[in-house]
Length: 327
Image 1 (cartoon, rainbow, N blue to C red):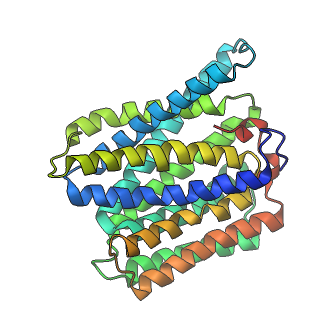
Image 2 (cartoon, rainbow, N blue to C red):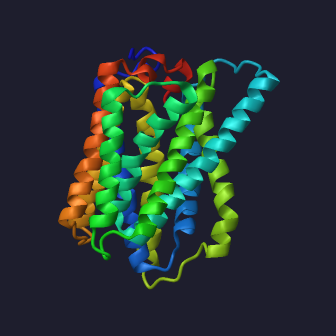
């Protein structure tokens, strides 16, 4: 893919994606530490993550607008405005499901398994959804990747010990993957006509997510009880800044110049970094069954990306210009 859309060198785009993948992997570890030091629930945690990320993304957008003023915006047609608002709304709801279900899965079954199931099932669900809704063929490699992911899920659920893998946590992780997949598929579908401002859409989606989570967070309790308030506030600030505002900005910038198949492989750094933190920092134990299931799922995602690259990767070449604009 040409890097003319953003002017960013491809090498720097790869670096941005690497940092983004590693940064996303720290969100679950921070969530686990918050759960250990307070009674904060997953909805409240997701709210503070999105609210803090929204503030930082909006501030960065305002600073960039003031320091690098661009041409006056063109008049937006009513139909395009309605489409943009609908896209922002659906993306925001999907983001709320994606993040909240993920944090709930971390609470239910641990960081390593929740991250692997979510990120392993997500690309597979996207491939199946693209086949059913947009006619994109999976091919033999894609079908093998789907089979590998399902086998990995079966090993994780049936082969893990009760203290390591809990079925309810796996279900929540799959719900998170489903939210991410629906959000991604609809974004691709609506982005075919081009002309959208991805930066504005990202900020708007985070605003919708924050509003969706606010009443649920108030019901659950936004202010947790803790004996270490400074630690909890610091962890919340970290989650909002590093795996949210920074990671999303770097991801969209890198994805503007790097092929989507390559992006999918680089994003495997997220479950890898999460698993390393789970074992090294949080003391979680990976059983043999969990390790086998993890390798099967990560192998299926890598196989899916390889099949996309060999088969032409329609999404990589046909992606509309609007989806190549960095956020």
